[in-house]
Image 1 (cartoon, rainbow, N blue to C red):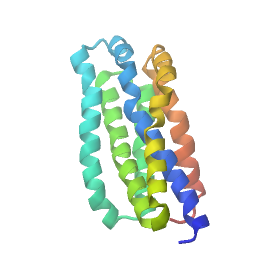
Image 2: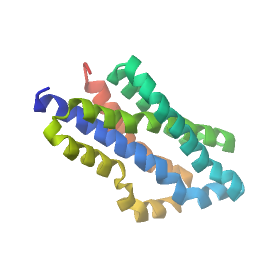
Image 3: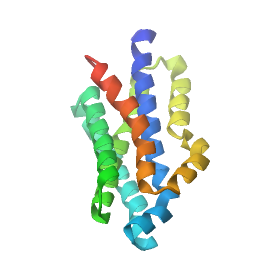
Length: 184
C-alpha cells in the first residue's frame, strides 16, 4: 500500500483509539460526583469501572473473531455508534441503571477501537516502520494521563461535564471521517 493511502486511515484510527482510552478512564476521577448525583454508595459506583473493564475485555477478545468476518469500515462504524450512543445516553440519563448501561455501551466501542487500530497497523504499515507506527498508536491511546488534572477539575462539575468532555472529541474523530469516507 502506498504511504499516502494508509496514513489518513491510521490517523483516524489513532484518534479513535485516543478517544476510547480517554473515555475508559474519565469516570475514575468523577466517581465521587457520580455517587453524589445518583445517591449511590462507593461499592455501587465502582461497577462503572469494573463493568466497563469486563465488557471491554470480552469485546477485545471478540474483535479478533469479528475482524476476520467484517470489514474495517463496518467495525469502525459499529464502534463509533456504540461509543457515541453511550455518550449521548449518559448525557441525558436521569437514573443510575441507565447511566451504568450507557457506560457499558461505551465499553463495547472501546473494546473494538483499540485492537482495530493495532491490527490495522500490523496489516498496512511497512515492516521497517511498524515499530514506529505501533508506538505512535500506543502513545496516543494512552495520552489521557497527561490530561488528568484538567479532567479532575471538570469532574467536580458532575458527570454531565465529564460526558461533554468525552463527547466533543468522539464526535469529531469518529463521525466526521466516517461520513467523509467513501470506502475502506
